[in-house]
Image (cartoon, rainbow, N blue to C red; front, side, top):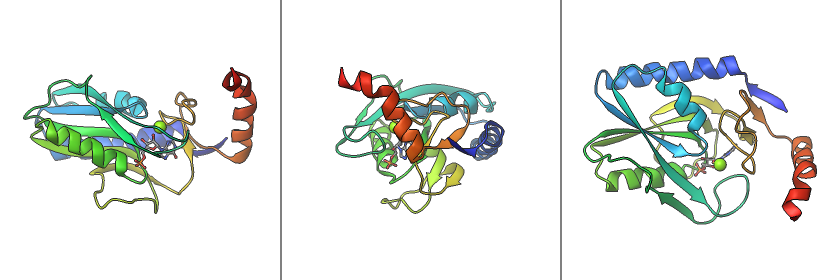
Length: 185
Ligand code: IMP
Ligand code: MG
């Protein structure tokens, strides 16, 4: 798999983002809400770089459709979310692609009465946005390629890679060879 960002580059990017977040909020208590599941690796690294008082919650965004990106109906499930009424919320997600997911999650968090909502994403994919909203904090701009690792998946795999890799045709072929048997069952 072709490496787009190494583990070390990712650490530096997340550190940069953490210092921007710290600068923006100062000592104000923060509620960080991780959009499941792609942002869990970023969440774990980011919160350990922040020193202000903070709470952590999760919210689930899922779409029925292809293995790759957001297709079809997008649903937001806030059943696991802690109370965010009157709190300053920072939403954390893996990637800003078309942008529809984050827009929908922001709406949900506003409906639940957050005092303020800002957004942080590890990646923003170049030239893909279909919404006017932009994330407030961005780790890396990436080209329009399908990436996996550091939380991002293809078909629910590869989230555990410590680097960010580009999934190319040969990788896809190998993936389907490996999992063809279990897919048939
Ligand atoms: P959006 O709603 O189009 O912004 O899509 C966001 C979601 O699509 C992300 O949270 C990912 O789950 C998925 N996604 C988009 N691009 C990629 C990618 O390159 N690799 C892995 N997942 C992606
Ligand atoms: Mg995904």
